[in-house]
Length: 284
Ligand code: PAF
Image: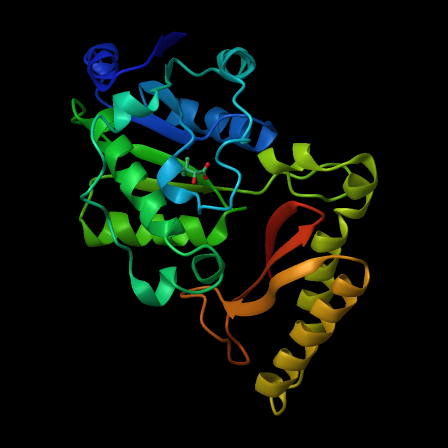
């Protein structure tokens, strides 16, 4: 496996290939990332992963400084999963000067849910992903795939829209959320949890499951106002256990707006347990 740090080194490493299959990450890899890498391998003639903690997508009071940087362990895992090239730029390699041009996503999608609670998050994500795409696919002429986890459900939708609207010749693939044995969605931030918090953390997935089940049982006549009541009760139940919930909500899958009876649904949640903010979702 080849580990490169600059865009020029990446281009040189990828020059012999036509069809990169690419998994962007911020490192501190877990089985969710590695599952994406394993899915990527048959999709291209070279499998590329990036490891870059992107300052642009962190708010001023978020965990940019403490986000775990575990490059050697990540590279060992990537090699085992079949990755061929790791792109691990430092900040100056990717942002040699302040990034004054940015990619501003569709407000209707990017200012709700995660974008509401993390202002600027999706602009930071889209800007770095667009830049990473330029670096990874610069030399390729064949089919190009990029893989993102469904755990970041809204992020996956924003990236899909960006790819469509800029007519990028890239197929975006969404990978299923990987879960621990108790049902907790795998996340790099799970490592922040104390033992007691880790035991409690599965309650977020369980709250989403109960909210999904209760929503599916609603009759058409009272659907719209009853969904709001169920969301409120689910939030109160979680908060009574000591969580601080940003949202627990039922949305229609196609645009994450409020659902009507009969829509394909997704329930999404973001909540803080101690100092750790966890997100999860469930299609239902
Ligand atoms: O999902 C992530 O890890 C990040 O948001 C991404 C897509 C690698 C961009 O920094």
